[in-house]
Length: 258
Image (tube, rainbow, N blue to C red; front, side, top):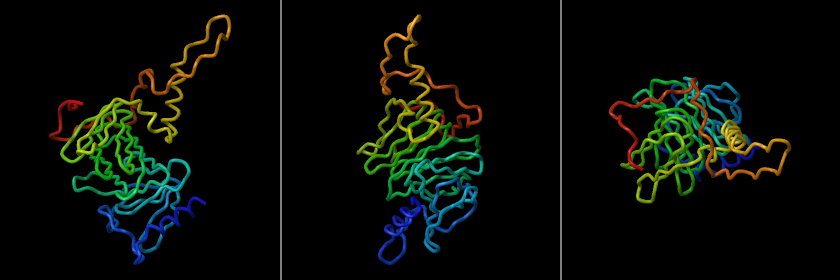
């Protein structure tokens, strides 16, 4: 049923001439950059839309949309996992410096979550007006109707909007303001990614750890549910299988002022 809905949405996205609107990330397909998981639909201007089976190679320039009710996965060639929120459309680009860009469709809304494997070349996420470059491990990029937001769960991420650039660390987020500059703030990062199974589990575990232990000798009164926006215990140690922070050449130094 979800595939049928997505096919209908794909048809509505066509322009009167029967061709799809062109975007800057669309063009001839190229090298294999990733492999599909379940719940993905390939959007093709020539052959139409079709579901992709697990393990199908994804090439540069191909357009994908998540049609599953749960997060739809992509696995890059180095093992990096990219989860697409339902109804999110992306394409992959092979960059001139050897890196890869995950580009959200500029005319749509959506969200992606990345768990980055150890890599030696750049990895970027391009949203409508913000670009996030991986310097660490786990983060989310949300592209909404009015706001684009980057939330760092673990590691560091360089975020660029217009002429403004910041390096975010775990527990920080940034949004592009009306003046084109980045607004940074402290957040409880898992709250922004509860659609991701791993983040939902981590948030539940942290909330359980924050509850006071029952009084000795009896159950005692039931403990009040903790405020999920309140203080939480420190996050777990970084996963050793994920990427260690990588600082691109010429971009050293501590994060800028918040």
